[in-house]
Amino acid sequence: MRPENSPSGQHRSFIEEARRRQIIASAVEVISEVGYGNASLARIAEHAGISKGVISYHFQGKDDLMTQLVIQLYVWGAEYMVPVITAAEGPRNRLLTYVDSNLAFIEANKNYVAAVTDVAVNLRDAEGKLVFANQDGEREVFEPLVTMLREGQDAGVFGEFDTVMMAKSIRDSIDSAAGRSIREPDFDMGKYSAHLRRLFDVATRKATSDD
Image 1 (cartoon, one colour):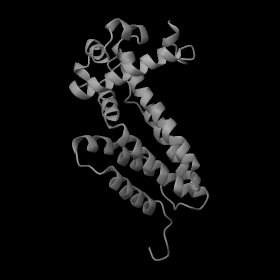
Image 2 (cartoon, rainbow, N blue to C red; image 1 turned 90 degrees about the vertical axis):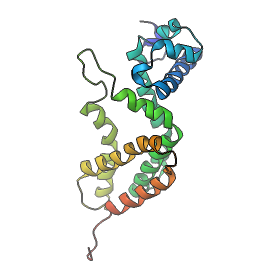
Image 3 (cartoon, rainbow, N blue to C red; image 1 turned 45 degrees about the vertical axis):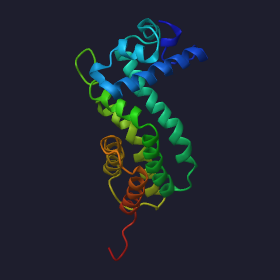
Image 4 (tube, rainbow, N blue to C red; image 1 turned 135 degrees about the vertical axis):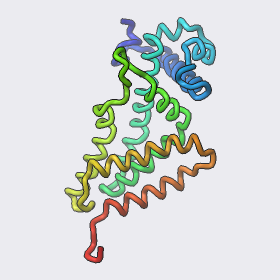
């Protein structure tokens, strides 16, 4: 196994990492233009202005490239969102920042998110199972949100509700925005973010005696 194909990537040089990012970026553009099924390595190489052999040097075939494409988006997303969320003071502000930062990241990376969605519903393993359609992967995404909601309840900031169901509702509302922003050219992500923040702000509040 070449150093650049090692899971840790710790042996990759700056140039090698830059090349991998260039290939992933080209893969995103090709998928956006012709779809996952038509995004061959030859097309991706042509878009990147490199030979197909260069892609093979950095990735172990199309499946590996597509897998790394998805993983990289989650890495970049975490690098963008985690510092912003953790800097917010208090459970409620963290929740509202969580919603806003997720949607802001989607808006700033619209084509990439759409490409990842295309990969996720098409990429299958040797047994024909979808690689990214498993409960473990989904749990990794929404479990931190569940923890955030539980901490808010423990602190007396949030009311009583099923934290898992609430987390899934929040995630579904966020994830659906990606497809909608692609389908609707005039979709206002900022307005949608404000709407969701109001919605889940109310949904997580404690019931009053008048309710």
